[in-house]
Amino acid sequence: MRHTITIFSLALLLVACNSVKRNQKLLAKGDYDRSIELAIKKLQKDKNSEKNDAHIVLLEEAFSKAADEDNRRISFLKKEKNPATTREIYHLYTDLEHRQKLLRPLLPLYSNALGRNAKFKLVDYSKDIIASKKAFTEYLYAEAGRYMNRNTIADYRTAYHVYCEIDELQPNYKDVRQLKDDAHFYGTDFVFVSLNNRSGQIIPHRLERDLLDFNTYGLDDFWTEYHNERQQNIDYNFGIALNFREIAISPERIFEKEELRKKTIKDGWEYKRDRNGDIVKDSLGNAIKIDKFVTISARLFMTEQTKSALVGGDVVYRDLIARRDLNSYPLATEFIFENVFATYRGDKRALDTDDWNLINNHYVHFPSAEQMVFDAGEDIKLRLKDILKNNAIR
Image (cartoon, rainbow, N blue to C red):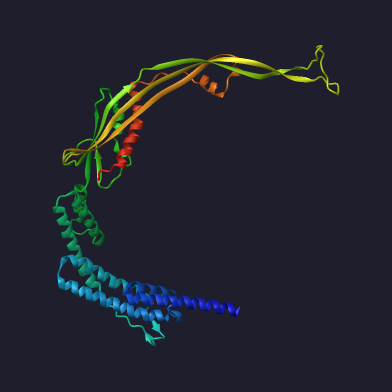
């Protein structure tokens, strides 16, 4: 047992040594924040443990150097008097406060190696954070305004994200909420979608309504809106034209054919007889019975109803500002109505399961041309959805 405990203790000691060496390397590289995080993580487990004493020493040094480095950087940036540095100044102050927040729950930290409590200079940065936050927010507000004044889609979108940053930093700041809505509106690509029937055939109204109902396409995009009716006060950047160029409906066709079904089946039994016509018996004196087979047949009269609709066209993407076509994608589908039914004459036992499925079917009225186009439109809608999803506006 003692041997096992010794090995376990050595293993722990080795882990502790490796952790200290890793921290020393971080400190030597000037990676003070990672050094601080590693030391605090170890001390949070047991700040009074001897194996963590070295981390207290390293923490004292890393904390002091990190604070000095950040304060020197802040002093330099303030002397520059460049509004663009307000972001960095604010984040430097929050970093300084964050380190102190991590450290405070562990204090005091007594180090055996130092023979005293570790020294940490804690500063009240609240006024500096408030002031730098105010300056940073004002800078962002002015920056967003500059983007808004450039009047381009890309700049409106950038302004929107800046306003979002202000909203997170300082909720309800000035008129940011309204400006953010404005940036989103002006940064949105409004797409006017039209349906053009150049086929010479009538398109069912419900099909047109379904094809232009973009709520069913799942094309949610924060920066894109599709409209099938022009709205006032909106400048449409892009257009999508769904053009029907061909709608062909075939005649109603009926095909009839006849097929013979034959089958040999068991049909009772009879006594086995010898050449003289006498009944043959087995060794026990019982008459021997044999299966009786007969060949039966039936005639199947099948009727097939068919009618088809071919719908063809294209989807054209157009830049409405530059007044030029961007891309064109073919769009075509064929819908086939088919119904098969049958009757029979003869012995029904000659029919199989598939035959009975046809017999149980019946004649149905052919769909109208309008219904055929509508049914073909269901597939058109799926194809249109794929085109729209695979070819985003921007």
